[in-house]
Image (cartoon, rainbow, N blue to C red; front, side):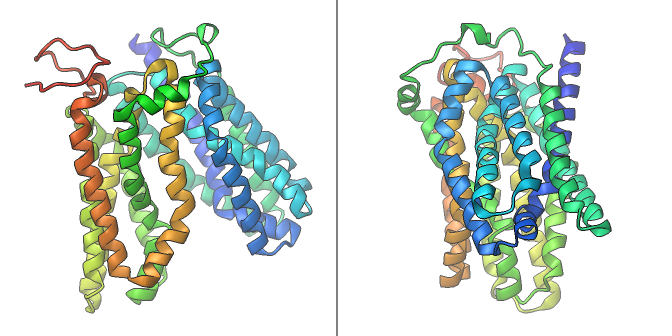
Length: 421
């Protein structure tokens, strides 16, 4: 069994590394690619990408139904093939209509990916192994994204045709990932695809699952918090604190390398404790980092300012280490197996909506009051932490505990958790 699990982990993580490398090649250049090959204004390119993303977001519930009906692996592999096919047609794009026609399939594949990958992980591993696999995934994906970015930079440095190398390389990465993950068979505990039924009332079941909806709603403030590193912090540092632009890249590297290096050892420690406590602590540390950023607005000394910025980013990274993989494992286990796809599709909205709104909301708050924005984020993430702790007793016992305790009253793994010594 141990040998079989090792083989599954190897094939899964190899697929994730290939996926991340391909994504890392393309994501930083997505807007520039179409601007380069079509000569469309960047504003028009951005509007087309946004329109496709919104349609993809609306289709999110369909992904949940497909996962429950056909299996997470089928949707995951299908999404990879769909995006790879679209990337192969990118070199043919020469106008806005054609651009929309090729970015829409990519947006649909991107939308189906998060609930599909979380459901897939839930099918192939259980308990503490799920936390460890998700931690390894986060670590290696960060490394893969970095390698992809370097490959893209090297290709573009040689020749402008490097743009085509980037999109075709991303397509090849998706196809190879699809081939690798298609060979992984879910464990015996997973429901076979042939025995699945299409539950017309599946989303009504999600609506009645109040603890799960609570987790979903409480994740929204934290998801906004995740976005500050790429959206709000660069503007805050350069415009409000008069920090050099080069500092932004250094801080981003600190966060990325920190996740890549520390996620696995941190998660090995966290699996000894309740997932809800780790998630709440992570959100609480996010709040602490946001308070630190707010205080920095009144610091004028150069050395103290730089030290404070690095301390705040270190705290942000610590919060991400505690929250990220553990929250994914908590939610995947809290979702009932027969409607896991629908549950995780709903949960994904708590990420998708903040990601879509963050550029507008956070920049608007920054323009009103930078200090106010940080304090509002701190209050919201602190409230999220407290809310998760209050939900703990109503969540399934197996969701709260990576390793089910042997002491305490006999309670079903899927029933509400109770106090355990």
